[in-house]
Length: 381
Length: 120
Image 1: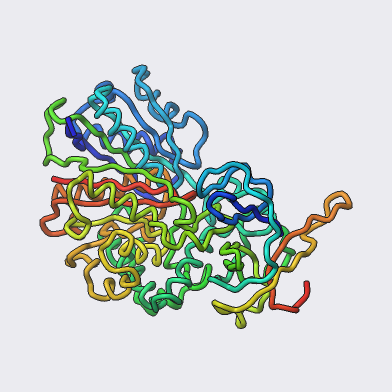
Image 2: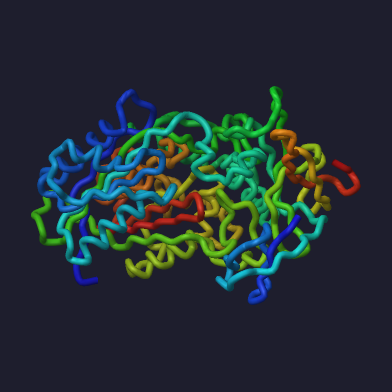
């Protein structure tokens, strides 16, 4: 890689439900990131705006009022991976030599409840009532339990861990610890997945400013984007909205998380087990177990035992979802990956407070969603 | 139920009239009739009314949703007309077709799978 791309600054609008408009939330995150970087909006050469549920030109509507500087502002959508894809565009823009400093902003303002099916399903699937998104996760979980003996209690223990981490995160929507009994007593949404084991679509904004190394003096510790990858799942390599079927012949196809993580690790020149900490797509608690396996942190089928070993807790060898994960923060789709990246930046700067990973040098952020969109970003000090 | 079989890689997909095989990109897979029987590969229970304008009545009752594996190595996502306490991975099921709703005197049909010999 000819040039290094550094994180110049980050800014987060908390995740939750707010009276503020998406424009106000996006501007608040942007102002915080500009302050963190010690630059002004006029210093930004381009902006990529990630969202899934906002109207056309939301990026320009949010950023142009801060100064009509004529820079390109481009809206990016890739379902739950939108933020990772926007970040990758910024990275490519810098590496191409087109820009020195690029803003990546993710914003979302989603209503309560299940996601609007008209955005992700075909009309006949809506007619037949096949629009409950968590059903996909539940079907994978049930089959995994059948094949490998993962238990409902192990799935619940992922939720216990992430909710417990969220207590230290003022930006999370839910900040309460639960016992495994409380998780298992919560209402079933799609068996075996329960309401305290899934993330809520919500609102929030996250801004990350990337810059070419040497383009501007940086104040804080040097955090580098070591890898940025986006892939879409291969044929039947993944079961996710809006799939109406899958092939048994896809059984050996590598999962999109495995593909993206492998490409990212190659870019970064590091193996997943050596990475200090992880923020992964826990749209439901089972998804996180699946991630351990697809990231190669444990053997296929070994995720329950890996969790039980304590490896993924704070203080373990491979802490996962120190922020509390999407289960605690909620999932404002366009902002979720960039908030993962911000969590890793704080971890690498050593300013993550009560959820700080000791001597964090590297971090991996992972998102995966509709159509098998998967993005992985690796940061390094 | 109809599917499409690719002459190149042999893959069978749900639905007729596909322009390409999504597995290998070869054009115009052949339309084939799918088996009416299969087995439950995985299942879940939809506990709350699904979002969107579907055709459930006033009283929503939880139902089983499953991936049904056909002998063609195709797994179809489908409602299952099987009581929640009787569903299991590996259980044999059979295609059922029913009237989902009537639009201007035209019956709109939908599919599900049920216990063999269970009828619609």
